[in-house]
Length: 370
Image (cartoon, rainbow, N blue to C red; front, side, top):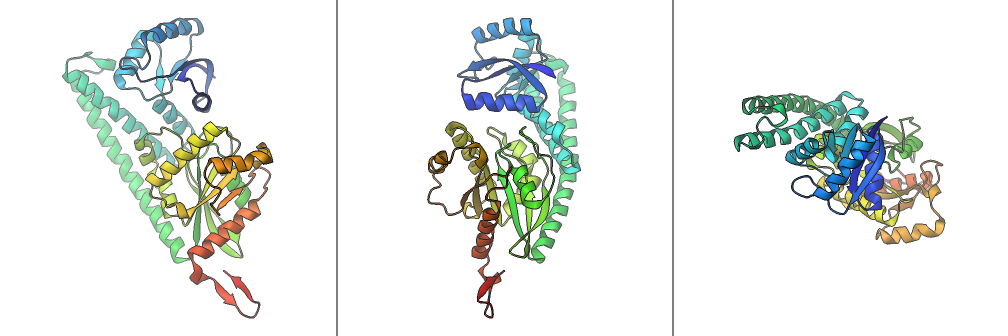
């Protein structure tokens, strides 16, 4: 495993997430530099911190220095020049994870599009620097070559977009087919590593790869389950994460749009997190769902990992998330299966409220049937 020095914020939740991202990308964090501010103009960090980093890097000799913030191309270049080592910012790190995890043809295209957009932003900066006469031959690319490089990226992005559009049309046909057949579509959403895939496996009998690592799931998988003797389609989707740039969300639009077209969203929340992490992750999930146009009345809040928390802490955390008055809140353990049947009952009741015309009174038995 390659060694990494990590530069991150001096906050427990930021440190834990950044370390998780490094591990998911295959890097062993051998030293952490904690800062309260990572957006200084020239290097992202101050000159004093840079000198300290230089000393540590000379001793440890890491394969990469990971910067837990989005660096401008000029900042990345300045750091790499001073330290003479590979610098990987937060975006680049996430892209490395995406690339290693992509398995389906569509998810590989989505990752390629995100990588090209990442490159394009940097190509624009190279053009700007070249036009201003600053840092000639920045990263070994002259002015003419930059223009060729920029146009090449645009051409490759167009090709990838066309392929994704084709895949999107195919997905739309599948959706229309499901709609004609009257299927209710339930999608799992949530912060990465909240336990969505474990819950999906427990609910459907599927055996998808599950892990505590970040971004285990990059492509959508849909399976049929039976609720009250009627088929329901359940989908597992890519996890959310804080400070995920808009272009990355956009690149995975065809995967995430399943949430937009779903009848019910199961928002999986790791209830074993500390209050600080819980607040940050919950806010990030709700913001992403809002950006995708998902209405809150579609959401069932599933507080997962019940087996890792004391009973008396549960109500405190539900109250902390302002969910005490919400009827569609349930605690479960996707690992042990505790309360999974109760979750299915909430799904059933939500379907009944959404589609009252589908429920017909069975007069002979005096019960309602879907």
